[in-house]
Amino acid sequence: MNDVKIDKKLDIRGEVCPYTLVKSKLGVESIEVGQVIEILLDYPEASSSIPKAMLNYGHSVLKVNKINDKEWIVQVRKEVED
Image (cartoon, helix red, strand yellow):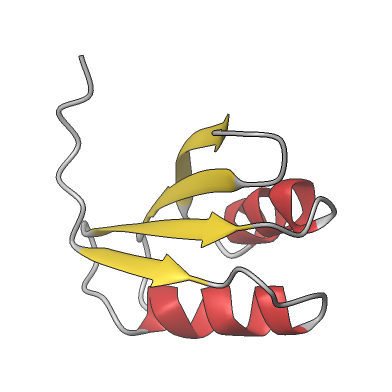
């Protein structure tokens, strides 16, 4: 069902804003255009702020999934060089 290749995984559980966004942005900067990063987070606000920021930066948000009561997975494909 999900045939997206994950090139990098980033676990930012335990982080809060603005560190969630800073670490996510650095994670995206560390991969190549066309690659996908999967971000695991547990800060509710970041589950909406990170996808919004990534779209603003010009990247694609492939998925935002709540995987349990406290955790989300966000998949981002890098579309532009930072």
